[in-house]
Length: 55
Image: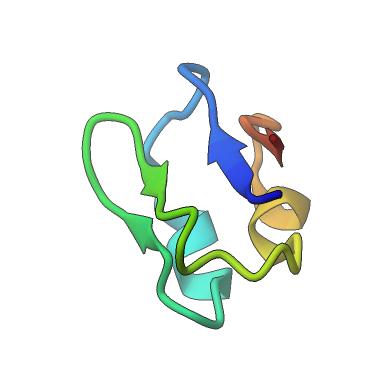
């Protein structure tokens, strides 16, 4: 199971700084690479719009 970013993402960049394995890529809506995600949840904890959840 990995985390995913929903369409609610505002591309603020907060999650990128928190990811210890650089699994998040920038874009209009950020994306998490499921092959790199370690399910730590750090990104979800800091998302200001709660756009990140476990898949």
